[in-house]
Image (cartoon, rainbow, N blue to C red; front, side, top):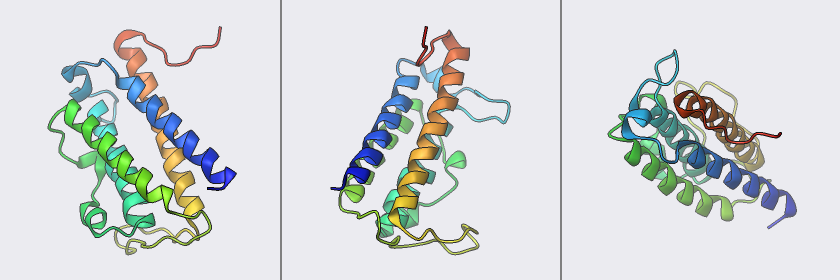
Length: 161
């Protein structure tokens, strides 16, 4: 593994831990109640990370996995059965993503790209771009979860005093 890939994957894992830490100990009501003016809940945000990031970028785009390709949907609209189920799915698909990422060289092109009617953006030229997108999405939404958590119970993730 190259040092670049090692650093990217370390940061991705740190942001995944951040996501899980931000929601640790939340009640089912906190997980499934509306958390933002646009109407999403914590569980819906976790579903978004699962479907639109882990399954889409790692499993489908980088892995070319037919199961992942078949599961592509708007993660914000994926049915929420419970907060616990959303977290279990996120953990499961993150582990599956790790397996794909372990065998992916950053300079290789994606193995699959969605049709324009599904994803109307130009294909990324290499796996590096996909890993960076997965990392940025995870970090961004970890921050969103920090804000939601602070509104729920005042808990702050990282405070420098």
